[in-house]
Length: 218
Ligand SMILES: CCCCCCCCCCCC(=O)SCCNC(=O)CCNC(=O)[C@H](O)C(C)(C)COP(=O)(O)OP(=O)(O)OC[C@H]1O[C@@H](n2cnc3c(N)ncnc32)[C@H](O)[C@@H]1OP(=O)(O)O
Image 1: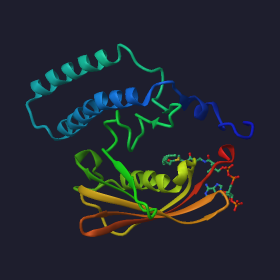
Image 2: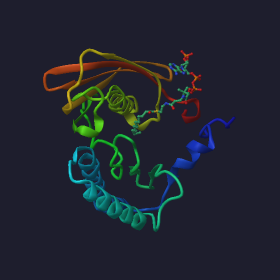
Image 3: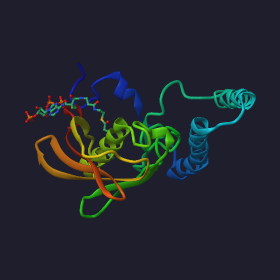
Image 4: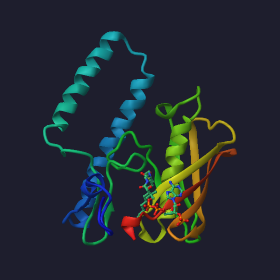
């Protein structure tokens, strides 16, 4: 059990890290690593869709293994975590949805409008397939959870997903998608958020969720 004002477990405490790195250096590193993640994302797509000969598959695997060994020559002991500096710049390079170094994350850029609407557009390819040609239901939930979390975290407060409810109205085809979320109301530490996922023809998933400002963050 953790004391009030503290993170609830070593797991949380370990990943919120203050780092004395100037914002300009964070930006420089981000600009250096983002293209690598883009290339690896491309590799994931090519790995799924390639039809080259068996020998070529084995040869590419050997080259990829060699590249992995080069990157592992120096690395963090655990996940990238969420880091922040004295200027208030935060960075979460491994985040499953927006991590700049995470090739598994769709390249999602979340925008907050002055009227409180939070939205993000992206294109989901072969790596996000569930039913044939369609977005995996869990991937839709992943994107919704994140964008709804950003909406709930208005004014820089910490919120965690408490309950998330999804209604899959129709299948979401792979391709361009848009997520929209906004706060519906608040009750104490509970923030009620409504959201949609959609394709160019309209809404495919409706969601509502309760996001909680955790006791330890008050
Ligand atoms: C900053 C830049 C942007 C940053 C933007 C970053 C966006 C990231 C988005 C990603 C979001 C995630 O994936 S978050 C990761 C997934 N979620 C989690 O891991 C959360 C795990 N659960 C927990 O840590 C905890 O159970 C909490 C924090 C949810 C609640 O704990 P607590 O703080 O002790 O809450 P507690 O006092 O018991 O309850 C407070 C009130 O909330 C209600 N409540 C409690 N739990 C729940 C629940 N699961 N669902 C509904 N309601 C609940 C209670 O009934 C009570 O209502 P009343 O009696 O007051 O009426």
